[in-house]
Image 1 (cartoon, one colour):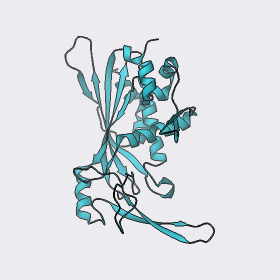
Image 2 (cartoon, rainbow, N blue to C red):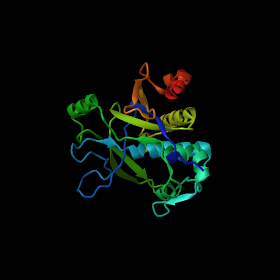
Image 3 (cartoon, helix red, strand yellow):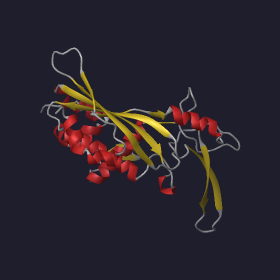
Image 4 (cartoon, one colour):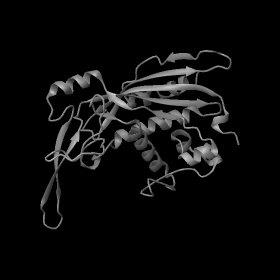
Length: 266
């Protein structure tokens, strides 16, 4: 069987976007210290700038999880000491046909065995300059974030146990980028459509923690597309930017056929 790794990389599609926070966003971090009176539910921050960011793994993992559920994929591969189970194809031929594994990748043992090539890369998302300045000037309780107070209610006694958590306030924006690799024999329409469907599912659900309690609603805005095409023997890639910025995923759907054709190089 010919694996993706054996094929020539024909083109790369770069999708840059702005992630707009609709309700407070919380991507949690391990707090290695104990501070009396401090917040016990901290968010992840850049250690150099102290600014909050969204790890690419958090967005990609959410995209994959939701796609697996909508596709009804078998949850058959335990990770994290069996506490988490995901879908992973068991054979190379299955992997190549699987829309989820071929796009999002496979666990390391599968990659080594079948030379699986992940087609989708998701970068870390960082605050835009405008949001960084606005949050710095807002005078929030903690740098760049709000502290949300909640209470867990005892079902028997109705006693309330207060708790607090950090969130990036609604209205903040993060810049991000998806990188989609297309090899000889790939179906660009399948890869592009599945990627956009995953983003739509994140919009419909939530990102990060606390989604069932109102946190984590986001939208993807101001999408720009760049295509890099590689020809055999040519020292440089042809770089083409799509003709217009796409304001939202709804706009993407309205122009879907033109975008897919452009991504395929036509």
